[in-house]
View 1 (cartoon, rainbow, N blue to C red):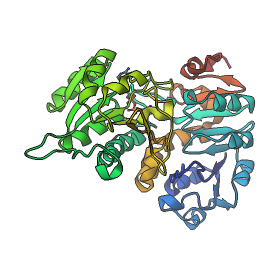
View 2: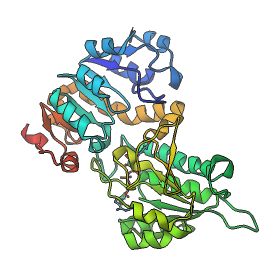
View 3: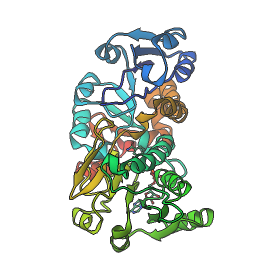
Length: 365
Ligand SMILES: NC(=O)c1ccc[n+]([C@@H]2O[C@H](COP(=O)([O-])OP(=O)(O)OC[C@H]3O[C@@H](n4cnc5c(N)ncnc54)[C@H](O)[C@@H]3O)[C@@H](O)[C@H]2O)c1
């Protein structure tokens, strides 16, 4: 298969979808790789690192798209990129439940859209997990910075001192992002509370981490906690779907001024009513005196770590599709879960529900 690796175009996205190690594995399986010049530079990989192993370096994104049957990316394509994908395959984080416009464009352009984040194996999302680990850890570290008065925050030290209380951290969603944020928070000495709708998960967490407070997530519990909380990390997910809204605008008035809402779920559409995507260059904004941090691509801040972790997770799936194509896709239940759009049909139920569009089962396309 002819596979294209373009340079990512969204603001401050430094990851590359295929590192030289994954590229080598694909080449050894007789695939052809077209890499846009400079695509790997921010992750520490030069054009020579790719050309020395047999990849073809091309100058521009249109050339990469034109020469390839499948494009492998990190972030979702722009509408212009989707036009270049007409009748082709893309494998990337699509996060379609956060954009009806992108969903409809992929359908209109007859793109076979494969999403990393909708593959679920043993109740986990293997291609989301490594990025969730990074995002969970960084969301907490970035929030700590925002607590400083010099950064516009309320002026609290996360761990407090022997004579002053630590900050209070609330994490909503105890999956991969939530647990990683919780580990950071506990490790730094904050008073930490974790909410989830899965009681078994909460019991397991409490037995492993006795210092954390856990409770079943509900509007009442959240409302009771908010007046004490300095940092909220939003980390809820229903795979593929738009996350539920766990904090509404009305609830912001319960919080102290300059408290922080960090919505990690913003890539799927966000779990706070007042969330809107931000960038690493301009990561925060305020609503009703509450600081919102809503960066869509948090792991991009650490591309050396993130690119290689991403590749470890995605390469078996990319190789499987490259080797077996559509025939293999329809004969592999796990890989088939990646299929979001095909032949102008929307094949992911959660995305269809998020946008009130009609759903076609992948088995019947
Ligand atoms: N912004 C970024 O850069 C970035 C990076 C990685 C992941 N993410 C996003 O972070 C979110 C979480 O990812 P994850 O890998 O931890 O998912 P996960 O599936 O591991 O965990 C989600 C958790 O949310 C819980 N949940 C669902 N509804 C809930 C509710 N109403 N209240 C409380 N908990 C609820 C689930 O029970 C589950 O434990 C996703 O939206 C993902 O796309 C964002």
